[in-house]
Length: 296
Ligand code: HEC
Image (cartoon, rainbow, N blue to C red):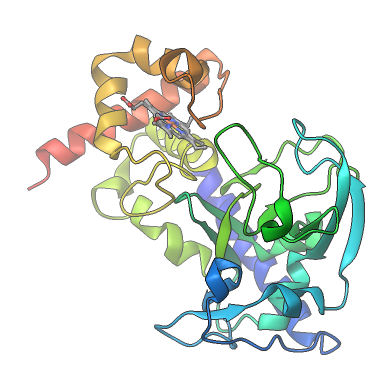
């Protein structure tokens, strides 16, 4: 239950940051429109006071560029990409301009490739992740580089500056933070968001499986949905992972450590886990498979 507790601690921290952000009246409110602008505008939803419940509102690139704190970095957007002039705005500023409300303590970034990143507000304060607005002075329609052979950055990209935080591996308890193809920012409450992973029959997992769940949330959930939570870049139902882990752990291990040996073009990153980590992850998938087969 350690990770669960750490997540909940993040919640308390998030609340502190939230009031900090709310108290910052130097950030002018973003004007949102109902116009998606050919997909170049950022959708805003969830527990923001600027959002409209049940509807999407949009911030366009020009209004994001007009925010205070827009700055230029000279660095690589990603280790495999060349250095460039990055015109960025701190995500914390965007969040401040949208004004989180109620018990919102995190944001969710939804991406067009069905990736989802969850960033606690406390993380926005500690690591100042940026939202990329222009690359070498250009908007996406004027030409942005590809992130990989099969993956673009546009319309929006979120990352932590490698110069401001050298050595940061890009992964926190709630998953990987660097998000390509971001189309929506949503304010959420962490505990409610992850609750389905801790509720019902999943409430009483063994200690080992529970540790495996934390590994899953941290390393897999951006792309592999479970109990309706998380991204779905993989487009693989959880039962497929559970079945591999249960009946063919050797293949499961190969797939996780060297995904390109199975799918040469895959976007799934290699995870060179040690034995203990595999035992926990596999136990989590086995146990939850067994539960789904015995559940009424
Ligand atoms: C960046 C997204 C991403 C992350 C993170 C990710 N995966 Fe995947 N995974 C995929 C995609 C995409 C596929 C489907 C293969 C393909 O077409 O590229 C896949 C396929 C798989 C498969 C094979 C399913 C099958 O039979 O086709 C397994 C097993 C798997 N992932 C396990 C994991 C585990 C365990 C983790 C965490 C340690 C993980 N993945 C993290 C994207 C991801």
